[in-house]
Image (cartoon, rainbow, N blue to C red; front, side, top):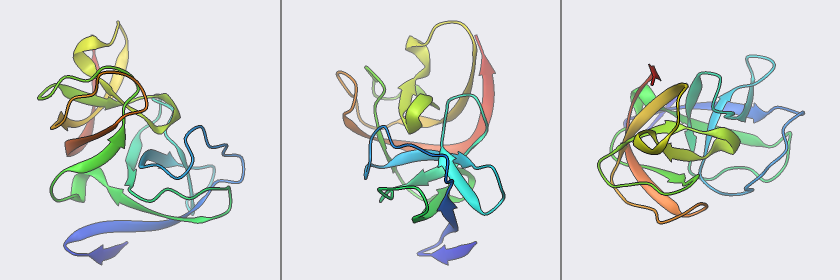
Length: 136
């Protein structure tokens, strides 16, 4: 981990098996197949953090700002409608989704929305928290 402006950032390499659904966008990442690898979060496994400047291809370096060490609002891309001040979770394809609009299941909550989105693939911001599991 390195310290950049008071935030702890982990320098990783994109897992060779990763494909990019939304290349070069701020995405949520999880640990890849080895400790030195990062993969795009799938909404199922523990999310590590986000990268504001996501790499474009597998094998590129990626700098992941850990959720439990981030300061201020974090960038993301919406998976659908997000209401301001609602809890958000790590969704499939590295996207961020509104917990209050999710169906039944178990989700990794990553923060609180500070910006609304009216649909999918829109830039949003959220105040990150230490990821925790929520079942509804």
